[in-house]
Image (cartoon, rainbow, N blue to C red; front, side, top):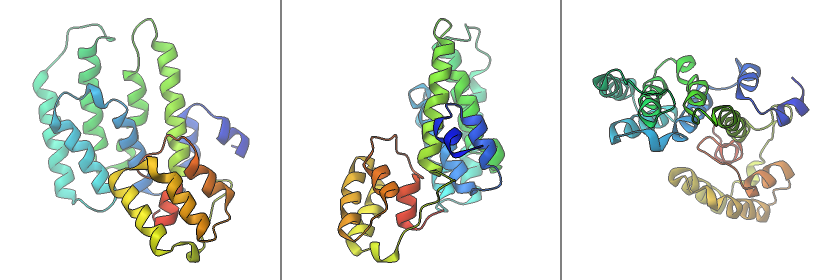
Length: 225
């Protein structure tokens, strides 16, 4: 894959294939979580939302194996309780049931199962008449998410330690903790005030996104990988 292909690709599958063996499990899990959040409205109870958030905390080392296993078990039990749905594959009921099993996957300790959530989310997209268009749109949105999380692997950015002032780190930590991605342009201004001259870093923080937990630019400032 070339840099031009990476930047233009509208399908997450070849991007993920290119990244295999080159990126952290944390980043892959956060991509899976971001995909799950795209079907948030289809999750019928807090049990499933809590499980997604547990997987997100696990990615950052804030939840134990036991807690992740328990969240997965509760999600699986709740998803199994519903049983089979005799409805159109495009019905909300069918899509909601499928979304529940996405949560079970994203809570897997096995990162390869967890990051398959992205491919599975594509299946939930759309209805019978608009399925192809919605499927392509979902793939396109996931490709954007991948580039937000992994950046441009052909031009890995670096951060100068002198840019990590008290103000910069306080802003970055607050944005990360609260998912306050609307404040990323403020972080860009603070970085520039600290002497940052990286156009790639500053422009990414100032663009419209999407931005999610794991955003490469925010991670770079915070020293996360």
